[in-house]
Length: 359
Image 1 (cartoon, rainbow, N blue to C red):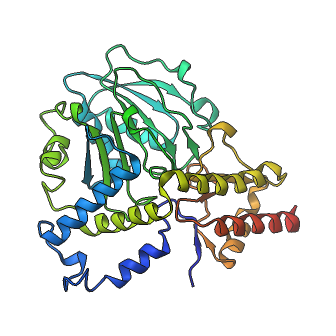
Image 2: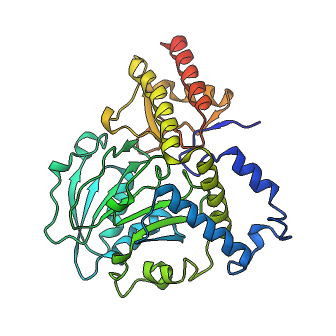
Image 3: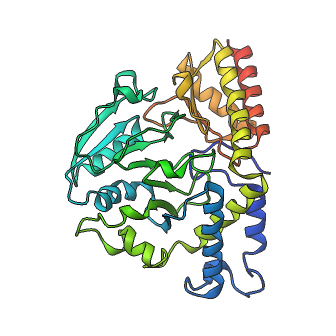
């Protein structure tokens, strides 16, 4: 029996994707091979990768002046690879600190350059996005880095920062493909696939062409964006099966009507949960309303002694992975694209029941 999986990642996948992958496990399109067994340079996998990239470009409306790279190492690796690939002789980069994932990016970048914290939400325990007019950007920054959705704290940018001629770099791991974005406003977008794009092992990097010549000499070839772009993401063996699953997810997204349609569904799911939290005197949402994530919804019981009771009851009702991250405690519901409205309604119904019994 399928359950409602609220995991922050690796996360729930569309059932249709799982069914297709299962059906093609032993024999992909009459090839007599599983995708897991294919040469990454064979015509079969080359066609899978080319279609996955084309579908991603169509969904996000990626301009032709950008390269799409299918890499490995996750967003954690990109935290180091961003400064390696973008410093271009400069020594300072601007970072906005909105939570745990921003802090990880800052920690890695400090190994390669001077990090200027242009703005931080630490004063209110990372429960909001600092307004753009409070940012103190450097005069000679190589780039400005933001995490546009903090998976742990549940804070999401509902606007795109304007950084002028300085490239805007965004870690979009936990909300890419969940909403319409203007790729042209960013210099670089990167994201792990295991939230809204597929399985762990694949990292997508979208980088503007004019930023490909800025890498530090120490940058390893396999992580050098220009070298990978020239090799069509095959300088080394790519995460072939993860690329295949991502391609199936992209096809599923297109069948849903694209990102504009999926965004409407995501707004409805998030509204259902947040509306209940705002009505409740038993549960609370710690994040400022205008900065609340549609994808990751942290919430707390006013009486934390009931947390384990709540989580145990959720499992009994077929809802798992609702425990909040250890950095913030409480609960967290990750309601990515593949989480149906029914799952969120089931959670809200249980929360109402729990409140009536224990309130």
